[in-house]
Length: 141
Figure (cartoon, rainbow, N blue to C red):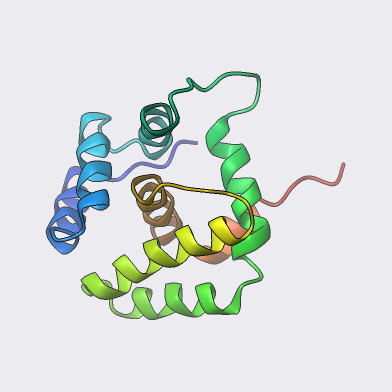
């Protein structure tokens, strides 16, 4: 099942993040893709890295799986998500989540552009960090 943002959610986030240019770029692509987070991720990835996505696995799912390893055990990131969830109208908290994701990913060898990080953070706050951590957990079968 594909996770999407509604046009009102995009409008709300655009207003909230109006001073953060990477987010404006990400939200424009989200709007173009009718709120589809994975299609927007793929488009941004291709723009930023110059390589189209390919292969049997979704680059979106592989990226989320790799980030899961770093984010789900990170108490600092978890507390930032909780803080934002308690105050979803706070632009500084949402921007801080995006910047934090870029930093955590980069520190673990996953260089992610801030616009791409915006898409990922919007996905995480849409579905919730606990669901993200459980959903992206690799099957042990």
